[in-house]
Length: 333
Figure (tube, one colour):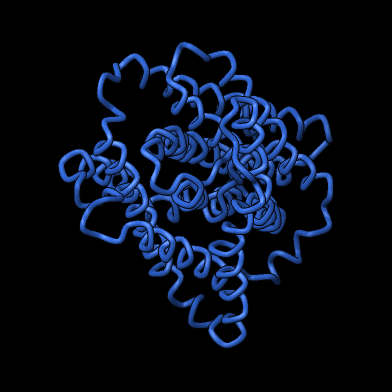
């Protein structure tokens, strides 16, 4: 779990970014002195370029053949959890504001994490090759499936615009930089491997910038005025509910498919997690210049903190059980 401990700085830094947005909203707002829209797009492109640069296709190829594992993880990520998110949004209509319900739906349709899912699978003694394949495939599928699900939700509320320009915009700023990063691996793979910790810090600094600017717009436009603590507590409760359902469903699915301990660990950590590293850049593009951006990101940030706490505990518990007398222990029982 050392990889997780090295990233502990990111959670307080994320909270600090939100606090700074409350104190200095003008600096990072869309109508402020900085070219925020351009900075966000360039930051998004940098994140996905670095992702492509550090992505090993050898590891990806090694996990490509376990189709039942892939079906469970991707089915959870892009079918079961989006349906749960839509259900939660429908059930809370009239109880929480529309922008926070949109945030719950956006959270539910995001792809899985990459680095943390793989690190947690490794810490739990799971199928690392399968985790690498599924985490990477999830990020690629999310470029198309996330806006499609979001467009479906907005369309049912009468707020949807054309979806094709949205997907083309994501391809331009997400997929193409990732491909460029992969091409650069032809001569920079060793350099990227040596400097991967520094590249991950750069990645997270860009995410912090996106979080700061998104909350600046929300504060500047008065989105949080009149919001009671009860609404925020309800959003926290809904993210806890979504994470609990995700963990329970993916573990039951792994048992039903007869997976061994290693495959169940990979499915658990890839199928229940949602990526802030992809969600923040994607939200920055999908909701650019809109005051709801901070509200949309709020559930994603809460889920990010919760999943790291819970998944870290589960991985440590699984690792300890495996080390004890050579026997494996149930992952989530």
